[in-house]
Image 1 (spheres, rainbow, N blue to C red):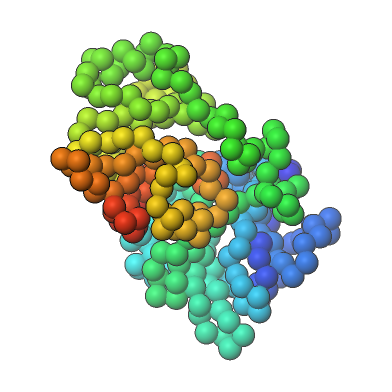
Image 2 (cartoon, one colour):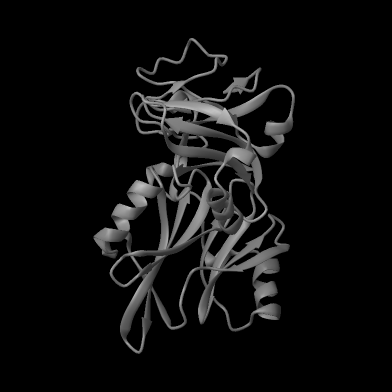
Length: 294
């Protein structure tokens, strides 16, 4: 959707206490909406920008009001600093109930040029990453073929076979990390290439579309044996956590972690709104740690 103004809207059953511009063609019952620029560059441009819509920030009969970053709990800001290195703040809101009590916060940031909306509790504790949709997908399953979030259909168009990685990338590993085993590769929306590799631990390696190395980061994993597992083989506790914490996420890859034949945990790579995350769990499926990759 092309927007001629920077309209900020939250999709959900909440109300906004201050007035905002609106698009009368949006026909969502019991919802107020906030659109955010689809890129950090659009967020600072004073003109036309492509927009995405943030979904599910409020419950019925709740209100929201925009605040500055100084009014966001320090624990929430610390979480963002730790999990979204190099992010830029865009805007934030308090969410209040009918009595006017604060029930939570929503903070919208840009990470690697993409918007991320994170919901926190009233105490500033992390709760979830909010879903994004395009204008035409505000109803229904939240995606369409050819759209920004088309990969939600499960066809994994972003997957890239290890065997066809550019020689610049495979040559970089041969020269710099010769004992790495390359596990999985993805083409990102910005045409960069993300390669998941292991060398005792699991790493995310980012390259430009031309194969130039950009960064390498350690994922939340343990020393030991790492074996690929299917989504269906994950403990139910993991599936529940992902469903409730990353609505409409896309499963990318998962690995079990074992030491001397004893299962110690899992690492799951997902895509949520075109940002990839690696999430670590213990053997029972309890959440341990997460990391935004790109």
